[in-house]
Image 1 (cartoon, helix red, strand yellow):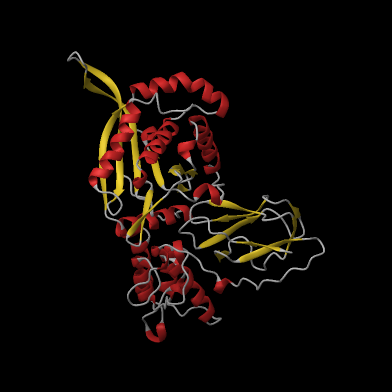
Image 2 (image 1 turned 90 degrees about the vertical axis):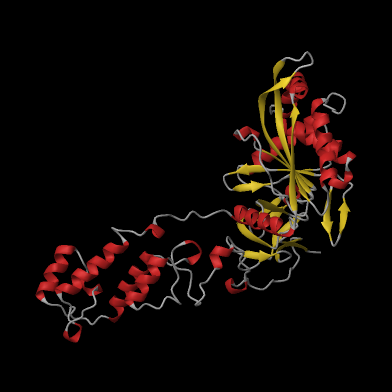
Amino acid sequence: MAVEVFIPKMSDHMETGEIIEWLVHEGDAVEAGQGIVEIMTDKAAAEIEAPATGIVKGIRPGAEKGAVLAVGETIAFIAKRDEDVPVPPLIRPEEVSVVQSEPDVQKSADNMPDITPVARRMAEQLGIDTSELRGSGPGGRIQKEDIVVYSKKQTDISAPPHRALASPAARRRARELGVDITLVQGTGPDCLVREVDVNAYRESVAEYSEKRPAEEAFEYIDISPVQKTTGIRMLESVRSAPQFSLSLSADMEKLLLIREMIMDRIQAKTGRRLSITALLIKIVAVSLSKCPRVNSSFEDGRLRVYRDVNIGVAVGSTDGLVVPVVRNADKKSITDINGELRGFEEKSKGMKFKGADLAGGHFTLTNLGMYGIEQFNAIVNPPQSAILAVGKIMQVPAGAADGSIVLRKKINLTLGVDHRCLDGMQGADFLGLIKRIIEKPDIFFVY
């Protein structure tokens, strides 16, 4: 029996997926688990795998690069070679649900399209109706150049085949200034273009080009779908969840000593130097297993407390921030965790994550210490209850047992908390446990 290939729900917030590229063709033989199509989710690019072994059939008409389909939509089938499959309906552009950010779809109060102030004024002066005009800027935003091009096209369409009605002085002045006289609106008898009209037109163009207003002294840079989604989710988080932060510093001397002791062994096994992040993921995992209330989310007035300890780790790239998940981190060795982080870094270079990489996180750790950040507050990643922000390791003065002042390597930790899940004392207990394990780590680790 034919098996459907459909757009899967790869995260709690995913509603649509955009097809990036088909990795197979109609009639190709595939194995179960083989990647067959690459899509852009709300978080990253991911491959949809073949749900069975067989032949790719019935690729849906219109399911091509750039098509955006809702979660659950069928896009193909895996079937036996001699098996017939249903023919899904054509995907029509007007039926596709395109996810846009607020600026891309914002309209002005008078139902005009999104347009720069300069372009609006120029359109009004030239009597151009912009309601049906599609701009070349981000999200179809109408810019000054669009008005100029449209005005010229309209002039070319409506102008009579004979030359524009203009005085000799106007034509001579137009040649001197490099002005297309067909674009100048005449104010003389029978709309005769006069020299004064050419001068006025040239001054109006100079206002928008040579003396460009301050509001146009910028450029637009498109952001990736991942960055758009991250922004929307973080805005949702601060709007819906009462959040507070707790901070403290922890002495890293013993943990760094252990790191040096086991570095060569773990690097030989994983091909990657043992990172501070890997150590902290293990420490957080141990702490979550001892403080299960933190390993939760707020739902319908009560807490959902998870049995599995799945920790998301923020990974940055040029395309945006993603949070792949280390599953059952409390049961994994540091070597295993370090190896997974290496895999995440490789996948982030092309955003080649699978749905399983990004789903199911119950707590997030974000480390900006490698960028020189000493301390920061992070926004809780909904629907999780907390997030740990980690700063750089710094040498700071500290009092020794003999009363002298010595330099110690310390790290700043800031716990962001959803107040609906945890109060200040519960958050402080959890953060304090992390500090104690960092400062006395030797009995907690399986290397």
